[in-house]
Image (cartoon, rainbow, N blue to C red; front, side, top):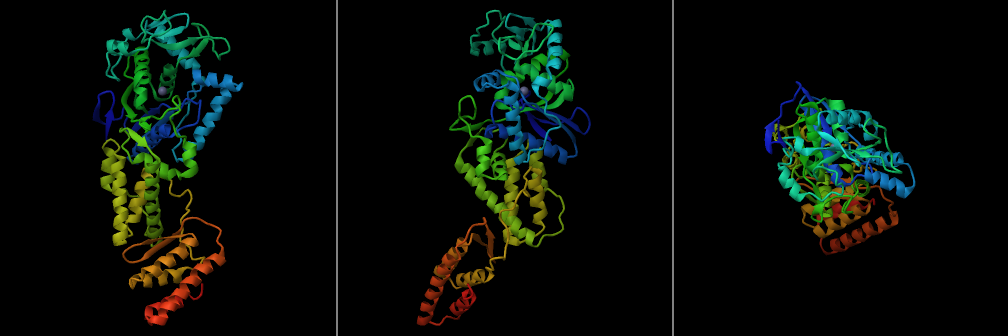
Length: 488
Ligand SMILES: [Zn+2]
């Protein structure tokens, strides 16, 4: 498998540190608000990568954290006059609500930053002892100049970074790029006791402590959004490697940002679309399809048109399952080689989806039932739920077969005014029709209240029209149609 490693800026062959095992850490949510679609992009990418590794036979250890202690959470707790822990728990619950609906596999552990304070204190102690950190009134800082390869992930030199750095208020800091490992106690803020003074941890140290706790001092893959490359991941590398003298992570993978109106989807700028809101209108599989249609590394613009496009493509997948299921062959889990190869090449999901849609169109041409297993397995591999609910189903409860037959006769005789009117009657009952070369596919989109009188009116008008036409000329097929729709 080849993966684009941000450390080398190249596609590299994936070689696990331990045979047949992959250890992955993904930066999770700061639980100050509900997840938006930009967050989901990262978690869906990580989910597909993990599923694919499992498909390839690897044992995957997957860890994703919650940052539950942070300036914004404290601020929010003050505003709402409740405990900061309650804010965190509220949005952890929201995260699981969304992630379970989206069929994202649960991680092996979801460490919360507030549960790993001791590990962070130990790490900071180590850095102080080794001379990588120093103390000021406002906290403990990591001294970036001491870490010789600082900037190796973001590919920036300290001088360049300095030029772009904001002017910091803390004049005690040796270098504006030095970052807080520990923030000294402030009134009305949560705090913990530490040998170097009470306070609370900085953001970056959390991820180093939690990832190394579960995955070891060196692990395989670290995932996050592209916006985390600098400073978050750069700082994670610096403090972890300074503490252990070992490489922290072998492959850093970053997904491109989800954009809204050309800008990063982000809570801070109020430029976002909440996942739960999208889920109110769209099935989870449609949202997954929308996200996987772009390669994980490309920037991707969110528009409702694109979501609608995914919706109609999803409809096509459903139609496929209705018809392929009708004559379902013995199911085998089998993914076509082309799709496996696409995923082996830096997880090329747009190509994989393209192949799936090709198979579906092939099915409608050939009715080759062996395609059922291939399409189903491929979609499952990409994490689609498929079974959640089936709002589309074949039903004969309304006894519509004769209407379908009558419509087919009308179409064969190019009597499109009549076939259209029959379609209108069927639509009224909630049926959707799709004409293929040989037959008409029909399915119910939703259960809806039907006024039988109204339906009868539509059919009666049609009967009258056919009778009128028959007075002019006695076409046998018109008689046949009339016979078929008589009962309605
Ligand atoms: Zn992180």
